[in-house]
Image 1 (tube, rainbow, N blue to C red):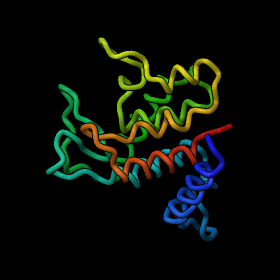
Image 2: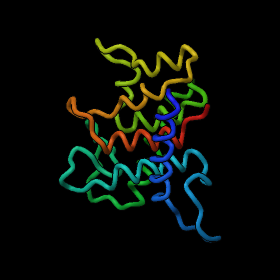
Image 3: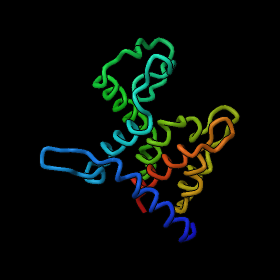
Length: 171
């Protein structure tokens, strides 16, 4: 990745991170002072938001209802938080073999689905995973390429990918 692109991404991320201020008992702490898993939870909560009745089949913080699940959109924030943590932990287990990139991949798969990364049916494994498996650590472009919805690049998804990459990429 060129230096100019890195500087633009870093400055965008720093602006976004200033929005992630959290209050704690001992004063104001930034998102970066949290443990990585907690950062993932806060990041997902920020970008997903709490889904309501009109967002079916999604409930809580972006949990997609599966056949047989009995969750409703009337869940409390505490229940939604618990469901988010359980879902993120499941995704971490799926990507545990990717070492220091496991959380980055888990957070990405929470939004795009594990199948898009791992491959399913006739769809091959993503270029991102193939690059990570080959040992190439220069995968910013492949990571940010997951910013399309119905073929269109969405600015909100580009912003989300940049923030996720800044928070969870370990060189």
